[in-house]
Image (cartoon, one colour):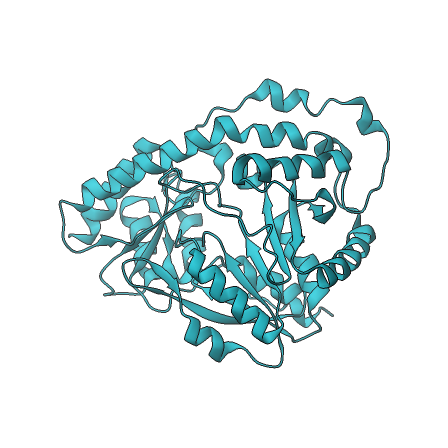
Length: 389
């Protein structure tokens, strides 16, 4: 009765069952996996956000496939102000309700059934579901760790074949927090040019460099056909306001054809709603107040993690340059999922096991750095109590 593309295992795994058991027992759990910025005790400009949704123009239906020009102008202005891209053309911007939808547009644009997309590993687990829904296969290429994360280019060359249709790079990666360096971006351009492949760049965490320095966006990459994805879910900490986009750049001929085809895809769905599009400029302005709060939280929690790590020798924190996560390397004496369940049941602390993000072996826990500071401090203390027991 149902399609093969949705033949997922629908029964809860042991980790989910352990969480449900604690909730049913009424136990308070310290959540060190939280990724929702609206639930981590941050201050939002409620009046500005709510007032931006009250606009008479929202009563007029103006079905522009790429999105309202005013909203696309706001996106272009963000790249100008935040990343120094002075000539990003709003015509190259297509609005979507989420980066997931933007991925689906690009996958549909580029791939026939069973074609392959090269994706980094470790990385965000949502890729697998997006690929299944678009009848696309994923071919992983590894990120390797040596005092920092790097793209394993020899493995990337081994992974490409006649079914390969694009390369995904997450900049910075989630959860490793590693940006693609200028040298790596050059190598990626050379690789894509050699095999006539587009580049798909996920930049949702681009603004969250822990050292405060601006990182270059690839939204104006003109070397190869490039699709850059982002949105206000992370930029402004507003995941409930469903505004995202993809920016198309590259040599003029393939860029123009890609945009023409994408416009038809977008026109087929017309998924963006008018009130949110009209509020896009206000939502993007919210980043100026929220990003400093999030970055301060991230830095404070990293400092606390390092302070507690300094009192023990069995764990280490891997280098992280951006984003909202930290990776803790722990003794691999049991499966990561078993350890995560043990932490839940023994000390009521929720963390993500590394295998959620396709780490190649056990011995990794992923922690959220946007967790409220007191909860983070106590949660780390409890984790080390168990690990040092």
